[in-house]
Structure formats: structure tokens, C-alpha cells
Image (cartoon, rainbow, N blue to C red; front, side, top):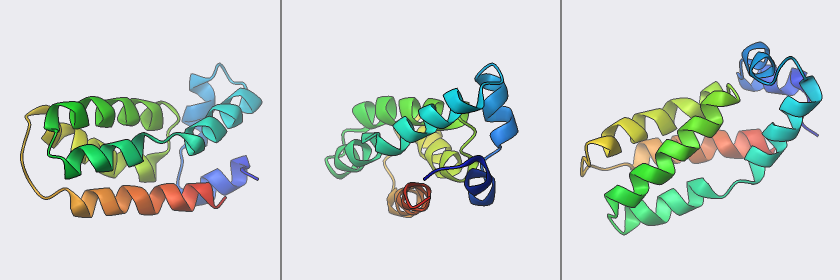
Length: 111
């Protein structure tokens, strides 16, 4: 079960995340639980494999917004890096950033 303490240990800035949720800890935890079930990272992986950089940017940007708003810093970092490269449709090897994002999401899901 995801708790505030486990999220702190994960590296999330829970104080900032809770502040964005009007100070409502339970609301914040509910949104984090929803984020854990989100499948946009899998969608992003498929779009990158297909070299659909325009769609990949849209997906990465949405994922970045979700993770940043919840202050899930370890996951936000690699997603932000991909988003900025995809913004300019940079055709590069995204495998390292994608692997790091997947690793951080798995850590988050294991809480």
C-alpha cells in the first residue's frame, strides 16, 4: 500500500505534491494510486518503437505533467528529458531514458 513515508523513501517531494492538492493528503494519495495504474509509459514505448515522434511527444508531455504535478521526482526526471527531446522531434535513441522511467515506475508500483 502506498503511504506518504514510502513515497518519501522513493524520492517524491510529497510536501509539494500535497500542497498542490490543497493540503489534502488522502486526495494526493488517491491521485498517486491512479498515476501508478496509468499506461501512458507503455504507450510512449510503442510510439517510440514506431518512430511516431509527434504522438510520442504528446504522450510524454502528458506523462510529464502528471508526474510533475504529483512531485514524483524520480519518475519525472527521465520523462522530462524525453519530453524536451521530443518537443523538437529529435530522432535519437530513447532506450536509456525509457528504461530509467520504466524502472522508476516499477519501484513506485512496488510501494
